[in-house]
Image 1: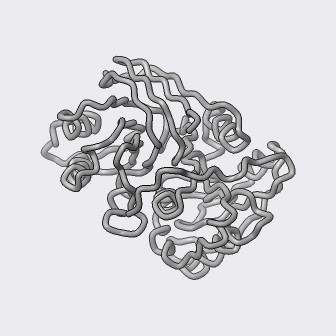
Image 2: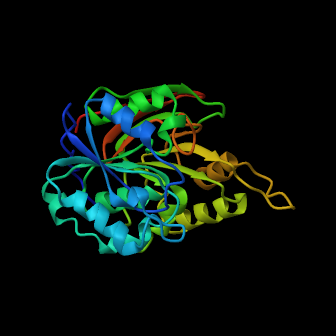
Length: 306
């Protein structure tokens, strides 16, 4: 684990640039023509990796096939951004097969969420390179217009600012720090590996889907006991969708569980941030400095200069 103070921004996209779509995890259930059309409407040239049509059990090809596919795009200087077609499960099976030497010398945007948290965490922990947590080709057809527009703005260097009203009372305050995070399950899975980030003085974003409430509590205990929650600058709680409970209820909502684990700290905490496994999955630039201003139910998040 390395405490990286200065993060690199990959070159922003321009009309005419080439971007690639690859599947580092689960296989696609259908074509992604809608996503290709959207990216082309932004003036981009789209290359599809072989994994877009590959299948091996539940994965988009064998581990070697998926690793080779993304490696090709990591190395290709003409490819300015790599979109993960979908999440699911499988990125952790190939992360140690990848060579990031070319990527490190010539950074490019990596875009995705959910299982793609593995890639986000890895490139920020080891190389200090920004990436984008946002809609993927599989989710683009159902993505809200604001979420798709936020992705375009993030990629083309247009101003991003978030203002929304939380349904749940927040912990008020103001703070500035580097934004890290993603899917809670995957962040916990990174613990003890080379892909684990330093949480100190960071603003942490968390989201998840389909987990049992007791499992959420267990993962939060993991972060707490490991000291990951002690020295944050702030906590952004995104969507925790399709949460499950046992026959004997756990007795707390996802938000109540999370708040109970950070109750002793004084940094600002906001809930219902529009990001995660929802149609309105707003793009977040991870590794970028942000300023958060949290009121009881009003939230403002902006990106700042270093």
